[in-house]
Length: 241
Image (cartoon, rainbow, N blue to C red; front, side, top):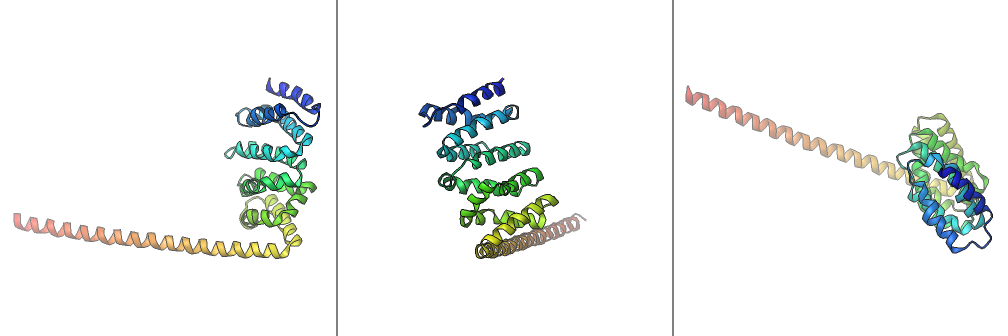
């Protein structure tokens, strides 16, 4: 099966000489990365993940390509697959150097923010575990001015309203990490979050008021129409009588 083939392939990739040949890189892009798409991925994901990670360990410049490939095939509606993707992502990031990380960090952390906000606790929990990896945490810390504004709303909402206690606890740890590393940046993000929240509540209040006004107009028009019809009926009956 596919899993057995990928297992053999993993050993072959492991033996590739450096620098990697162009045809090997093309094989990664055209064959291996698209293998994340099929529904049967769980049957061979472990072996595929090993092959992908081997490429990045051989040539860290491929990390940006691999991460963008994972984002392209991200299983948005399948929580168990998301957990698998996050596990693979951690392995890839473990072998990723700063320049490649910076190339893809914005789309990457927009996706991670969605994972942090997931109501499926295992997805949120797995995303939060990325901060337990020293290498990844170091990459995030060096780029916190870009990353924190992207993920801050997800962190703040988790602390307040996530139903799962473990997710709340892990989120508080990550939040504390940012607040201690860069208190000024953290405060800026908190202020912006509160401003956005106030604007959102104001907009919702306006929408509710607008709907209420519309309902009142429809209700008064309906009453007027009913009254006019009743008058017409009464007049018609009087004429007939």
